[in-house]
Amino acid sequence: MTQPGQTTHFGERIVALDEKQGLVDKVFHDVADRYDLMNDLMSAGVHRLWKDAMVAELAPPKSGSRPYRVLDMAGGTGDIGERIVNRSLGYAQVVVSDINADMLRVGAERAKSWRYPGQVSFVEANAEQLPFESNSFDAYTIAFGIRNVPRIQKALDEAHRVLRRGGRLLVLEFSQVDVPGFDAVYRLYSDNVIPPMGKLVTGDAQPYQYFIESIRKFPDPAAFSAMIAQAGFRRVKHQSFTGNIATLFSGWKF
Image 1 (cartoon, rainbow, N blue to C red):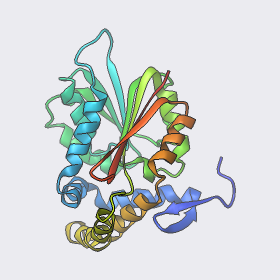
Image 2: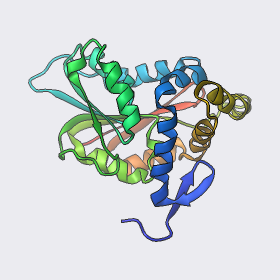
Image 3: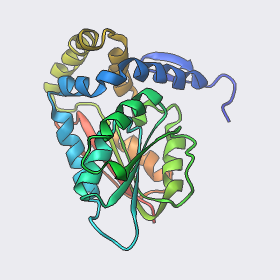
Image 4: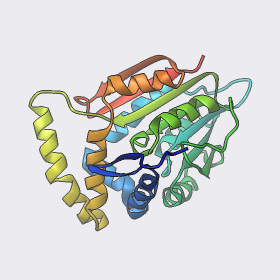
């Protein structure tokens, strides 16, 4: 239960903890239809390589004695879900879940043309209070979504709850660039190129100003790894991509 007066960051702003989810929802409502296009433009397509690496690390099986079930949280447009199903040659069953109905609408429409559309379902849900049974998934993935959750630790606790013993957590998230020289160039690019680009493509720069600020407020890899361990995961590790622009975290439920 939220205590009166609790606050959190919404980008650089300090807001009441209970207000953040509504603010985040509006951001994604405003950009849902061009979200993936902006990802391509902002990263010059490199985000696709990071997501491919995430699914390669998951290595979903192509056969087995029972269904291999994956919950892809904050996966609205379905790009991770599609990758997982394709890599498993249609064996994996993926539940793409998101709190934002507009993002899910985009994903469900796209899924109609996928190679294995019957292996993916779309469910509106809050990462902090999942409507799924305990011990019901083999893997939980979330790409570039955990930093938008108001109560990150609660979401990690829920991920642990819904995973079966032996299940795996994979979190792909933006991080702080730590390469001398490159960090300054990246900051200039983030501040001076991304918001205007967002305005040109989506008609609104503010969502992308929030995205930049939310990245800077996210815990560093060591601190976030500690949060994953606190949720009960073991063998927690992380690997950084492209000068630490993005980091892939993993952990196991034993």
